[in-house]
Image 1 (cartoon, rainbow, N blue to C red):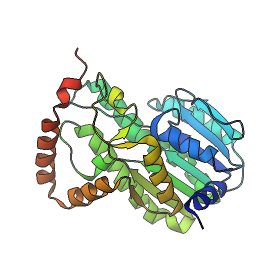
Image 2 (image 1 turned 90 degrees about the vertical axis):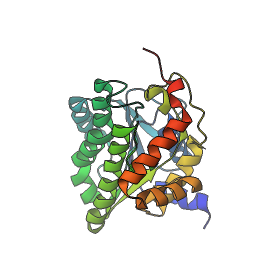
Image 3 (image 1 turned 135 degrees about the vertical axis):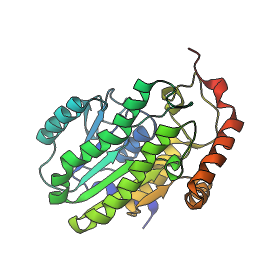
Amino acid sequence: MSKNKTVDDFFRSFSVVIISGASSGIGRAILSRIGNSGTSASVFNLSRTPPEGVPNSLKFTHLTCDLSQPAALSSVVSELQKLMPREGKMLLINNSGFGAYGEFPAPALDHTLKMIDVNVRAPVELTGRLWEELKARGGMVATVASLAGFQPTPLMTTYAATKSFMLDWSVALDAEAKRHGIRCVAICPGPVSTNFSKAAGFASSTGLSGQTAEECADEAIWGMAKHRPVVITGWRHKILGFVSARLPKPWAAAIGLRVIQRLKLDRFVKKA
């Protein structure tokens, strides 16, 4: 069976697909691949802005939601439960998230706290509110973590910690949930050409080499289709993840600080 056929069959096995943050970046690339699969699933996007260019052939609904607001998330889940099909497997893709760069609490404490809400609280709450449905129907929870989740990362302290949480949470949840017919996949990209730089407080792209959103999405989807608990995208990133996870954490943090300082990312930071 070809790789494309395997992925098409994977998406066609679900009656409902829920993704957060599909308006841009990795989420938008995943949504495009879902659209090309020929699935008859009802597809829902949860984000502040709707994605552009969604094919008419896709049963697609955008639900406007600010994931940093607990009340908004609770409300949108209630709406979602009224709209989605009542039977069939469910695919939940926790994709929304953003970062920050600079010595803690830069770029601002409010930014940092909002990042924790979007990167950690929102996916845990969204998954929790849909958990009984997932147990009854079976399916998958895919969560976008990061290569940064494999080690403490100075100058991106809170961002890396949120991704470490999501990585460990997803892997542990997979072990718990298998008996309920649910698989959980943690997707761990390295640098990807998305809007991350802008959200992290940079005035322009840092020019760091990395994958395109489409390349990252292709690897992520293949890992999902193969039910791999952890998917690191990009062969260089796989090596880095392997090495980082085995270093003593103080060593990993010290090395990480030196590497980031050598990149001289401060020159890209927005001036107050």
